[in-house]
Image (cartoon, rainbow over all chains, first blue to last red; front, side, top):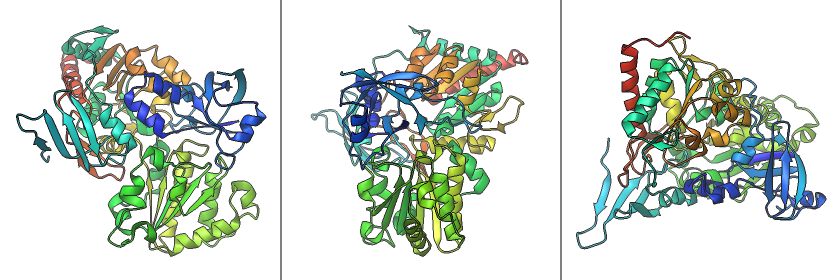
Length: 113
Length: 452
């Protein structure tokens, strides 16, 4: 699946409270997928999943499903943070910029929260 | 420098100060119309009039941290001792690097460049993992540009590409680009047509008159097709299969772009952080330039941190290059991919690092973080972070714009003066950096650094 890290309002406001605070860590380890994708994977809001790629793996929670028309099938959104960094490849293709969006990951269900 | 406009309360009233025209430095909008109510007894801002949701969090969550000014290996030490140790680390390192700077005022950025010039170090800013690819594209393609004031007063076609300002820069729409009335845009939003190009629906989508959903990783193809159509060239009959956007939609957009009075393309990290990186930004910049054959068209990156644009400006006017600058040979060299911090750390090149107002231990790729943890790190930040926690020398500094003055650049390269709200017991990052710089000069005078 394609992982798209990005900014969100909650990520921004919790950042101000402090990165070491629980709110920031919760916000940046909660993913979003559309309803069809979550159904296909047998996932509900609150379930824990493992995202993995050749660079690393992280455990995150599923947020509420997004409408199918709002987020394409097979796409995962996550607010920027330590979890998305764990999966980021360090190669920058000579630009200085690692591929920070559009990362290919595997999703594994770990169980209900 | 202009004076802080403040109103103090009478003696028998609570100890309240009102700061007018204060500046928010959370994001690159750098809104300078804040009215802050400050409780001077509690050292807290209790109200931030005109602030957006991010700005309110920035001002209202800010207090004085219960934290030492300086620490070495997690142990509280006098500030002077920490500056001695920081200078020693930088002096003895063969390949010291400095990174961050986008949440520091220009006055501190200037000292950071001087330090790296002195120790023949490497200086890079968070631009390299933000709009660094756009910086590369500017040098290759050029930039047809404008200030946000010009956009407000003139733009009748506003296109956002690969960005979500409603969540990242909430007042971009309301202060500059969509709703405000301008000199030649008397009816505000009614006089503008707003297009949003993205791979998903975001909270920014409802603002747009038209949303265009591009397939992930196909921005370059879509931009190049638009360039071809603007120039009257034919494009692949399967353009919809390639990009997810129909030929009809493209034709309509091209006509709209060619026939507007003043068009602007704002672009975000949906272009710079995905496959294609600087080619994507370059294609968009070239499209804006092409359109000037027909009308007035500009392009601007939507910048993230409060003074990331200042970092580009200061490093540029001091070294000739905007980021990823190496002084190892005694003169500045620029080479993204070689002198940019992710690459330097991932390869294990650096043997000491000074991190200023940034948290790479939280947001860099894993391999870079692993190598960062192997070398001595000097951290300057206004809050405890993953990086400060792992630093050999950690300085807690005052927050710019809230506790300190100085200059920052808005995302359109307009410099703005800060108006602080209340004092901090912590030093400014300029003071810490100046202390380190002074010590380095003394160390250099006592014996040149060993050759690498």
